[in-house]
Amino acid sequence: MERNLTLVALFAAIIVVLGFMPSFSLVSGVPISAQSLGVMLAGTVLGSKRGAAAAALVVLVALIGLPVLAGGRGGLGVLAGPTVGFLLGWIPAAYVAGLVTERWQGGHPLLVAISGAVLGGIVVMYACGTLGMMAVLQKGPIEAMLLNLPFIPGDLIKATIAGFLTREVWRARPALRAGV
Amino acid sequence: MLGLALPGTSWAHRLPAGAKLAALALVVLVLLPVAHPLPLLGAAGLVALLYATLGPRALAAGARMLRPLLWFVGVILLYHLAVGEALLGAVISLRILVLVGLANLVTLTTPLTEITAVAERLFGPLRHLGLNPRAPALAIALFLRFVPVLQTRAGALAEAWRARSPRRAGPRILVPMMLGTLDDAEHVAEALRARGGVAAGKDRPEGGTKWNAI
Amino acid sequence: MGAELQDVALVREGRPVFAGLSLRLDERRIGLVGRNGSGKSTLLRLIAGLQAPDGGTVRVAGADLARDRRAAIRSVGILFQNPDHQIIFPTVEEELAFGLEQLGQPRAEARAAVAALLAGQGLTAWVGRSTSSLSQGQRQLLCLLAVLAMKPGLLLLDEPYTGLDMPTALRLQRRLAGLDQQVILATHQPETLAGFDRVIWLEAGQVAMDGAAGPVLEAYRAEMERLAGAAGC
Image 1 (cartoon, one colour):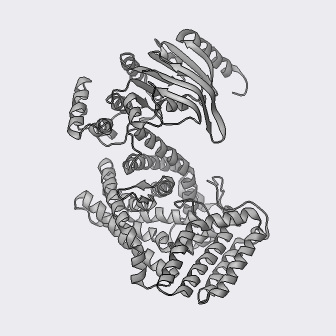
Image 2 (cartoon, one colour):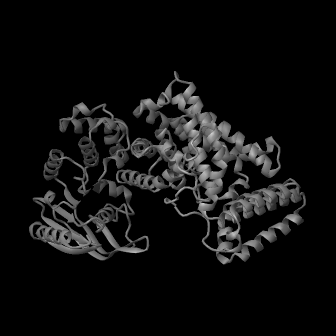
Image 3 (tube, helix red, strand yellow):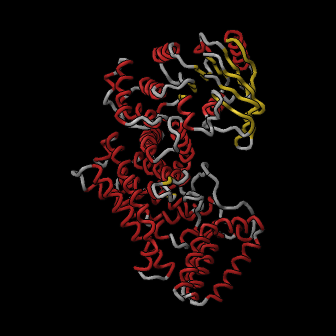
């Protein structure tokens, strides 16, 4: 019990610290915030339940008024903005990322890790983000998706990075691969 | 880590947190169906006025918190202008600004201890799900304790990278950072268990948690 | 190699760390002593170019290393206290090859150089090992080798003996004594500076004493003992 609690709390701290780091500037030169990378990693490294709990902890801390989101953002206002879906979507995103890595035990580790990151960190995340945008911007699903399209390539790179990083962690800590 | 709430004893600070949250929810429900920019403009004026009654520091903080949204709002307005739906664009933009501004007002005038008390009450029902209601509070305390520790570690790793590379550190340093953190978690868990563990607090009378970490 | 600080000023979090600090560092073995918080680590970072001064200049062999990072990694190597905060890669080979690749060597050449380096140290057994399987002392050695592999002219060490058991510490001391490059070593344990040419005693960002190792260390030791006896320490 204690171990799960500390893993969740400390990984939530990782997600937040990633938000403080200057954004990694990738190939296209577009600065990309590392925080959602942390969410993908929470799922793939800690598993579905703990990963989702870590994401939920960050969301909770942000809502109670601490500037933990990238750019020093926080407070209740984040629930009323257009990116609300992306924020709340962290929780199911981490959950699904973890679920993929937990269920798919036999596959090649890198493939499993990247798939988890993509399914959770992109498919589920964007689904939630799009729903949020639809609500706040009063748009249909297709329009909202179009608005999100430019960010997908960057997030795909992030998911790939998450896959590589996860595989390295699994190599060093095989117990985590088994979901312990 | 400093919370976003501003210190002070304004009228807004003295309102109970629960009441402010309920009022916020009410305003959201009332404003959602509004389809014309004029009432929303009025609402925006009211919100600005509310901020003004709290003083220049509150106005500055409110403006600062809205800044990241301005880019978004600009794009929204331009987009709607381009597709010939300027009115809708104005409605959507204004509504976002009003609701975000008002929600942030609650955050700015509600000290952490108060809002976490509300959160704890909301978590009460978790007990019936078999989850320890003290867990979120403990998790938050641990989280707050370790954010600066991890920042230092990230900084040290980034520096060790820069000591051997002319380029800035890349995502690679996240591996030793995660591994170090995973190890830390094991040690902290052990320390927790040595002091009775998470369950130890369950039998203590409810009376709020000691937010020493904040 | 030679380092020079001229009128260096540094402010951190609103407080002055250094003001008007000027030093010429040419001796082969220089020790830096001082209590925790005296500025030893920060001074090493300034010399390595990891930190730029707010005022004045810091130059190593005439170059401003804070600006010219390529020259920096070619001329200065810095070893920090905690190996866990320095080791970035999961295998020994990758960790050692990293610096070489950053210097521009193609991967194959770097790997060959690493193999040669390990063989020269009698550590062929380390080829293929994971960094997390190494002991504390071994990880410390790995960090040192990783820095030395880049053949810097000046080696800076920030409290390298922290947490090492006696045989490991002695081994490190012997290794350092045999190095060709100029060494500047910061420590709060004066006994590890045996045989050094010059010792600078830093106190709250100022030079309290600067000269031959013997007299400076004696005065430093006496002061530390006096502080230990004083009330409220």
